[in-house]
Image (cartoon, rainbow, N blue to C red; front, side):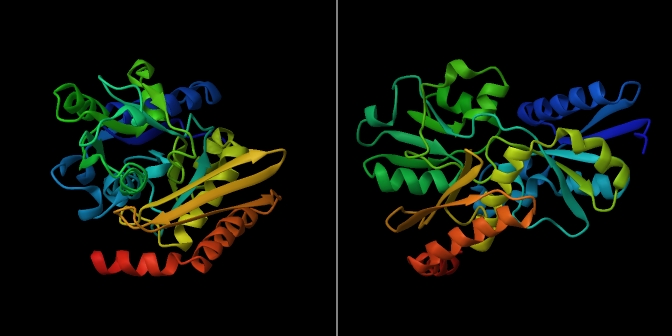
Length: 315
């Protein structure tokens, strides 16, 4: 099946999103010489509403809806997403056709005055856009003041530099991809801050049934990353994971086996359950998801259901 002569990639217009789209554009161009591969930049509702936490305005789907409409209307053939921004349940009519090799999936501590979380004095203001990070910080560093931080990566760094925050927590992958490694004072270990499902990985979304484009993007898929991300997403999905649920899920491959860790907590960090499972990766795609569901069941047995019920009452 030959590649289309023209391929349009839908992307948000933030600098990081455009980096991701250009990265995929370059890889596709190398695989499909002669094809005209262009990027359609778009502004989404998630980019426009910056005065409220994401959990209050509809969640991660706000970052991809406009891109999906462009694909439905034939104005684009694919969209590139940071996997941590993709809703755990894909909208009907769309599929994740490839998950590329992961950048550093961990969280980064960024500050102009302090080298790490343990150096922050009581009352120091830490900014984050994530309920997951907020719950972790409130649980482990109750003396700190946690404040919401919205906007694209450059906006968040500007707010830090303006003195609105003593430190901010960001995904290390975004800083690395934009050549801003020098802003990272320390990279948090998974034990300090368990990453979000899919963090550091890029996903390629297509209209379901587009066999030609599925063949085009198939070489971008990294099997090890895909195994890990599918397990993480299945774990999150089984616990109703969304922007409204403080939840972490992180899998790594070790000697052919998948090691998946996860937690769910209340937003104030006072209640948290965590666990881990290991399993052999098989040829059946459902094996990864079964591992994720198994961890979710383990956490429910430890009291995750009660936490989720409290979160539902708070919405």
